[in-house]
Length: 230
Image 1 (cartoon, one colour):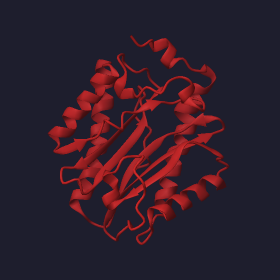
Image 2 (tube, one colour):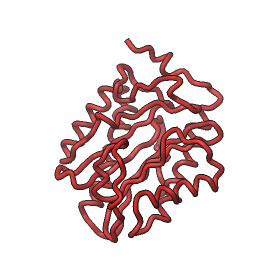
Image 3 (tube, helix red, strand yellow):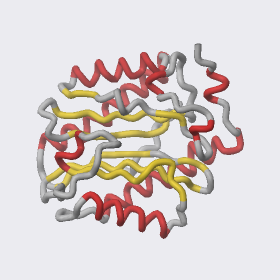
Image 4 (tube, helix red, strand yellow):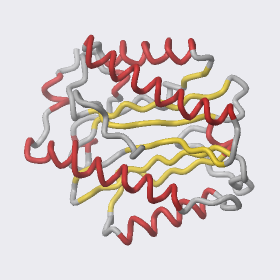
């Protein structure tokens, strides 16, 4: 049986920084990176620009590599290699997933964006956040275990006509760097209800054609999600 105390213990001095300061800076970074992504770029070019932005902000460490996927690559897993031929089109979909360390505290946020006009892209962008919000609200109201939380997300995803990939997207702990010092167990594998301001909730959903997907992640909290600026 997992011991919640051992998996969720944390330096209380950094909880505010992680749940507010680092989180806000990370969402600001997502928006900044989005602003300079343009059609014609390769994914690697976008990542280079993103990392240049982080350098300008004084970020020297990341708990995971900067991750940006375009178009057909939005269905790939985090560890799949990048494809040199993938270039952002005038009408396209892409997502940003970043894990900077701000003054020793981890941030981790991700969101999906659409270039041009494509109703399928617009729909899946909105739906992945809806699935996130529905699952977060279920956790707030019912306090399910992590396993139950991701089963709920699986059910909601299927109802909306998409595929969910929990095999490689299950959320994780967040803390002062590195959270692996506490645990490598995913949020979706927890046998107890995850505590607030400790665990990342994340989803990657794919169109059933497996031609495109969408991603969203943020910290589980008991208040309204900070999320990206509207």
